[in-house]
Length: 72
Image 1: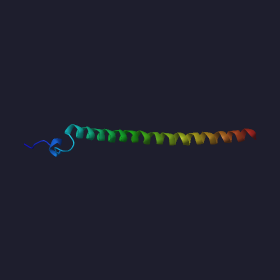
Image 2: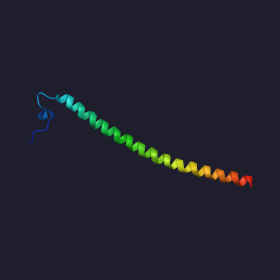
Image 3: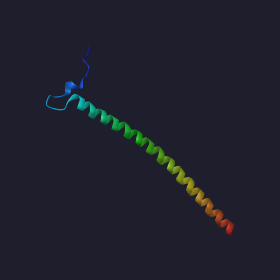
Image 4: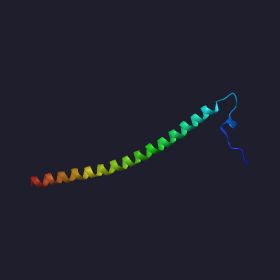
């Protein structure tokens, strides 16, 4: 039976404590996950805004032509 890999096996007595190291690792993983989620939403928002921008440009162009047609 293999011995489980424990963080304390990699820590020197003069360095950081196991709980502190685990807290750092946890914070790092949490930050990575949050960045991933935020970037995913940003990408979705950018695509949505691009579509809305095209729709608004089309409506503005359409409104300009209607205004020109009504002047004639």
